Length: 363
Ligand code: 5AD
Ligand code: SF4
Ligand code: FES
Image (tube, rainbow, N blue to C red; front, top):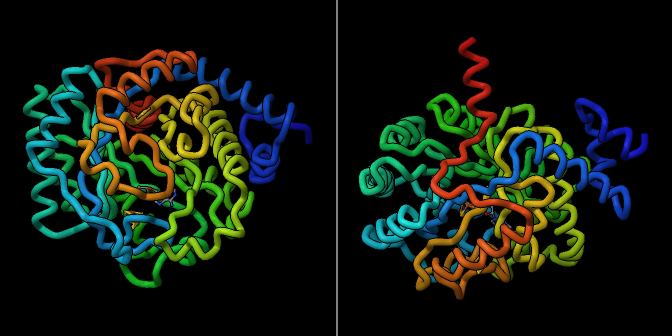
């Protein structure tokens, strides 16, 4: 079947997706054009901000691909102070960013859970409830998810990383803290507690096939995910996965494959939120703008205090490590305008999909 025929189908099969993800030249252009059209029609050209605070690079886990894994002894570990978090939040609020994301390595101790709960409450208080809060803090118990939700967080990002369980176990240590079923269960718990649920994957990992990536897209649909953040896998020297660097696609191939993933997902799940991720920018100087053009509608300006940025190095060549909040804000404004987008200042820009599901469930 031709790309044009596939693009007119109401739902894509796995084999359709493999064809779309393999598209090059004119066919790839047709995919991107269709995605831009769907985006315009269903979510419009607004791009919503999620000011990103990389709260801490302490992590109890040991994912084989990640630069801040516990086993990497070359990383200088930090935790942002409460004052600094509140200052960053105030900056976001005063500059009319609709929302914040608090992201960190995964920890579960009582101190950590309490601190986050407290910070969420304080940010809500400081902003008169105006800043929306997304958390990205890994797998936690239902009780913890509930406490943070009750404190005022209303969205949660937990990437499945790879939806194929065999690959998941290949990329993680074989122990109870790195269990595919547990991670999947965490997504159910988040939904149950009431969050808008985000997930995502890495694209272009060693041993990953087009079929795996097609399954990743089907995973988002099957689990009715509200928001997706996905981007290319980028190697990091001080990780076990670096040993397979010779098997990787070129950076440009990984980048275009990621763009095709974004475009295909926008056509499949028309009203969800999709992030233009920082990893896209790491592989292409116009990475985030290109993502916006083919379907993304969320961007995460970095608000992490400058002195910590170098230490939150998940992968090589991460952008914005030498900049501060003001520079990223100015830079992004220009970039979003170039991509034909309009910034949704002062708006939460929640997932339309989430509200639609809730309405459907009630009626
Ligand atoms: N390349 C790209 N993304 C990575 N992440 C971790 N390590 C890498 C890497 N080497 C992503 C994971 C995680 C998020 C915080 O960063 O998907 O969920
Ligand atoms: Fe920790 Fe997340 Fe990195 Fe895994 S990907 S080591 S959980 S920060
Ligand atoms: Fe940080 Fe461009 S967004 S420097």
